[in-house]
Length: 231
Image (cartoon, rainbow, N blue to C red; front, side, top):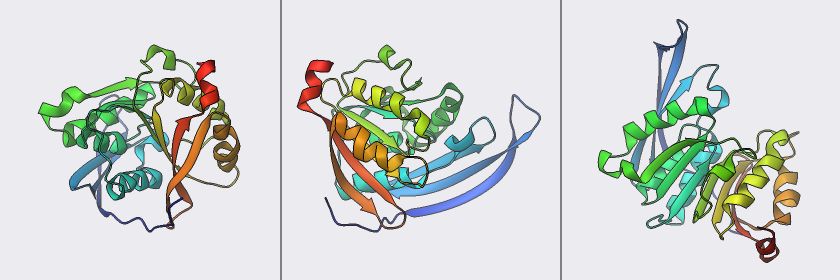
């Protein structure tokens, strides 16, 4: 385990109001700039009821991006899938760092992800990104399971989703993928139990980074040898 570190990054935010093309109700658009690994990421969140919590750029995602920078991570030649992409900041950075990335979330979130890809990814590189709907525990088998890396940030906000999330992680780790999860631990949602009891049943779990700004940890997971015969 590495020592606790302070996460630092540059951020600039602005907000404006616009009209949703499918509704007469105005929506709030929040634009934020972040600098990671030498890339200036311009991330837009559509702040309306349909997007819910997915319109926010959560601290766990920023901590994971910062870990990529501190650890000098390269995804060149790697096939990557991100779960719960939200605004897409983590998957977009992984693509800029060379990965062939599939970004996933619920169907209503995909327009936000595609918007941020269009803003941040050069056209010549967009063939390395896909955006697909994925509901954990239900349709993950519609995806390939030959990924090298699985990414996720702040996926543990609701304990009701934990069994489905574990099933989905196990599926995508079928051929030995490395999983990076960045999680903020909150009272009352069982997130500590998820990481200390549920995940170690199926994965080797290592904390590779922490943030002292909030109770956030980055986990590196690999499949247990005993899981090989189960998949």
